[in-house]
Length: 202
Image (cartoon, rainbow, N blue to C red; front, side, top):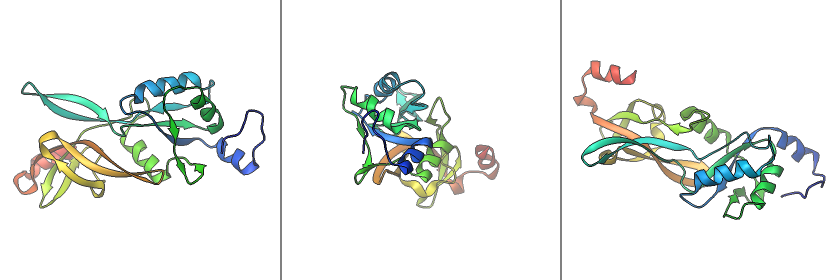
């Protein structure tokens, strides 16, 4: 529930707002960076600690050459880090473009702690880009040798070796969201010499 300026709110909600949380806002796909800038501009000073659209790094072939590129990790969503949800809501009302603060039921809720921890572990404040991982096929499964996906193989639902992509699933405010991250498959485990595998892990 949003409260009007000057309106009192229950003590428990006031205390919850004092904690810094990550809130997810749905925006038009392709306008993520623009809306981040607008939200930071419209919100009062200090209301937003960070507003970002997480991205992932991969490689694409252009004119026969592999080039480094960055793509949106969560197309159509941005994340606002704030302890003042009331001020964020007020700023969103001033933005003419479509923005939708995600709810569970009738309540605005922050990103779950495990999904927040996953994004924090894979990105750095300021860039928020998931680096590309390197792996091998181990039978029908992927073994990630290096990069941020190492240890998170259970999240991988599919792999496109030709496009250097791994498909993963996340839970975002109760919604199952399928996304992609960069993953280069360098062969099959049995074809990779032990010394080569050790160097890739570093």
